Figure 1 (cartoon, rainbow, N blue to C red):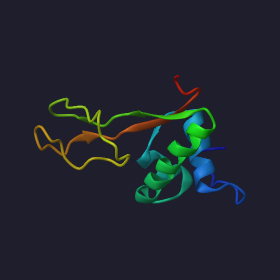
Figure 2 (cartoon, rainbow, N blue to C red):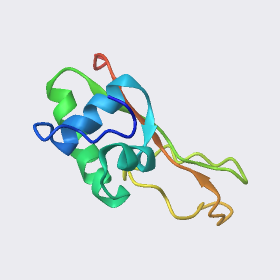
Figure 3 (cartoon, rainbow, N blue to C red):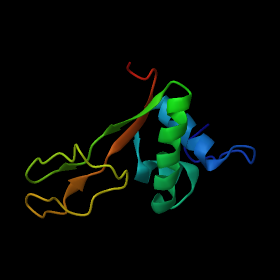
Length: 107
């Protein structure tokens, strides 16, 4: 499916998000453009997808957000949305977390 094509009527937004993440890593902002939903609506789908992937023997890998000014990495953040400010330097110049579907859950 080309980037500007809408998903088929038979495919739910969550199925489309899973398909895009299985193909390549994406931010929530990129996914919002691909599945034609606001970014705030993509985040709950990502949370549900993380739970449902575990049942399928896969996992949602998250490359955490990072402060572009001081380099702080949001490693322990549980929320999947974009953080608003760096806790170390208070900068709002942050990279977004990047998501991807990975093969097997480590044992």
